[in-house]
Image (cartoon, rainbow, N blue to C red; front, side):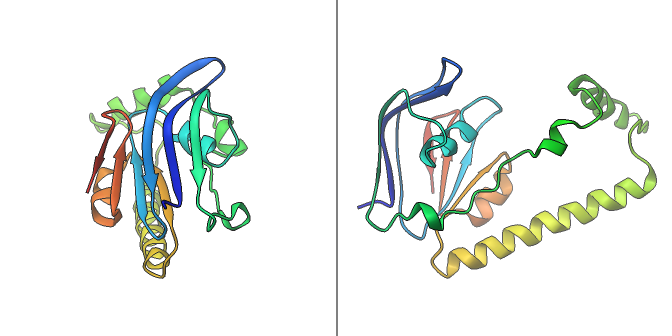
Length: 165
């Protein structure tokens, strides 16, 4: 039996249906990346699997080896990040301006920080991969296709509703 099996799962929040009749399984010891565009239901799926949100319909079955007390969950955004002092428009504009060599939010030292963050993210993936090699089941929600291709034993693309690898 799979560690987690979703059958005909329909999920969403605030009365908005995001995914319908989703069927997937996660095996014990697997390293799974769940990919998809913003709004495709990645975070909603993991919150539903973890019991933070109730599914609209369908079922989630857990094997007897599933122990909710042994689950680690690192959410995408903290309260501090939610109060970041820039609007989405300003962030998008800064991205467009950076192509012209204009960096409204960043100074030279920020480029060094970005490189350090990239290295930290790589190190995090390596640590998690080592834990997975020791038998830990890992589910990662991401937009990072390259990391998914490098580390995952299974890639679930919610937007395309396909399982790769």
